[in-house]
Image 1 (cartoon, rainbow, N blue to C red):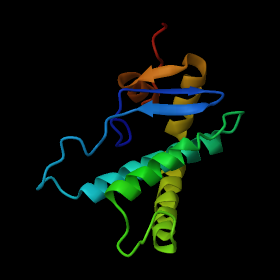
Image 2 (spheres, helix red, strand yellow; image 1 turned 60 degrees about the vertical axis):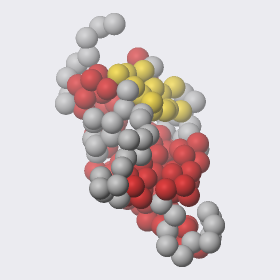
Image 3 (cartoon, rainbow, N blue to C red; image 1 turned 135 degrees about the horizontal axis):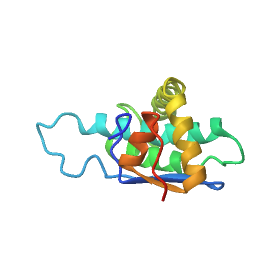
Image 4 (cartoon, rainbow, N blue to C red; image 1 turned 30 degrees about the vertical axis):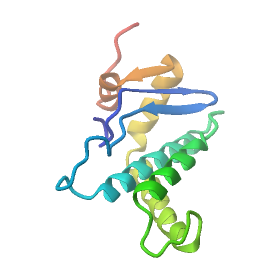
Length: 143
């Protein structure tokens, strides 16, 4: 787990980035806490991916599927109370709140995100332990 997100590996190319991560709701059972909160947190991580790619620039196109993933999580597991459908005003208000939260997280952790992105542009893919080392500012061993 790095910056609160559990994953197997992460990759980035000039066409965008992606993370291979586990569905946080798999294995969830009553008494484990709110499944909707897990889905909202997962949506925030998807929105943050797109925000980081956009901020990185340097020819890396935001992977707009991040937004689709976030909407799937919100619509399936955490629709806001009062929303009639995905995309209505109530839904969009929640989505905008989560997008702002994602942007604040990207801003707060930008140094670590930038380190990870630069390592990924150099190496194409990193495993979780390698990302953790990069976040700590450690040099990666040669491959």
